[in-house]
Structures are given as structure tokens and as C-alpha cells.
Image (cartoon, rainbow, N blue to C red):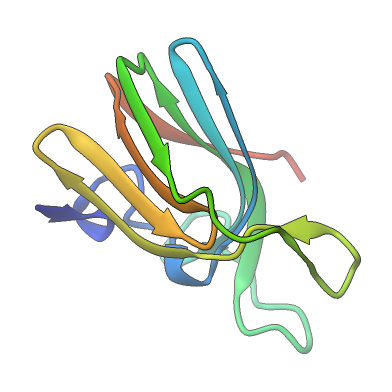
Length: 124
């Protein structure tokens, strides 16, 4: 089992305090829309805004070349954050095990087998 902090594409993000804003799946692709927490080593890291603990940046966690996808316990209804936007909670765990990425949180548990994963940040 490999924790997400040991995966090159994910090591500069702190997923436990990031917010899942949506999940979209279509043939060959799975995308999580996320308000990411950037670690200080990330090139886009900025000093947190007043009243915030972290440097946030929106984007997508994309799984490409998906060949197997299971989503169980599709979780709780979304909550509304302080700005009125819907969110599906945080990422409780993310690991790679036996060729499957496993992501758990309030949105449920997703196991996905994919050729690659990448993060695409929304331009500022």
C-alpha cells in the first residue's frame, strides 16, 4: 500500500483538509473537482488569506485511461460552505494498492484502476 504523499503528482498537496466540490465520471475518465490545500513547497503556494489556515487552489484530480471503477457508499448529501457553495467533505484517505487508487471521504469510497492520474489547477 502506498500513501498519496508518496505519489509524485500528489506530494505537494494536503488532501485531508482539501474540499471535494464534485465528482464526474465518463467512459475512460474520472474527475474530482477539489479546492486543494497547497503545501508550502508547491510553486503556486501563497501566504494564506486572513482568517484562513492554508493556501487554497481549485482544480481537478483526473484519472485517465480508467479501466475499472467502483463507487460505494456514495456518502452524505453535500453541505453548504460559508459562501453558499456545495461541498462533499474532505478526503479522509487516498492510497494506491494492487493497481487501484482508493479514495475515501464523506462522498463515499472510490476504487479506480487507471493508466494515470494528474492534477490540473484552475488558472487564477
